[in-house]
Amino acid sequence: MKKTYKIEVDCANCANLMQEAANKVEGVAKATVNFMTLKMIVEFAEGADHKEVMPRVLEACKKVESDCEIFF
Image 1 (cartoon, rainbow, N blue to C red):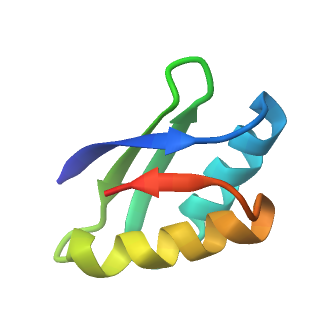
Image 2: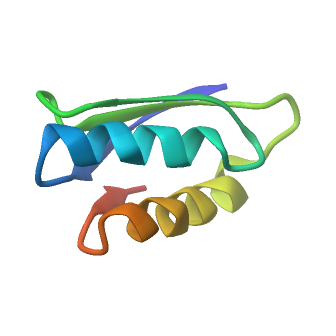
């Protein structure tokens, strides 16, 4: 399953770091962050529940940029 989320991030470099962090979260098959559109596209691993995975993605991203936000 693939879902798109609106994000709030301050710079393109932080967006890249958030993408790297999101891709390391268990349950994420592939995450792509687009700074220009302020969107994150997350493809979830087979059998992963997006409602359980996304809070962990947000936690990982906040380690990169503490004031980032993902609206899910």
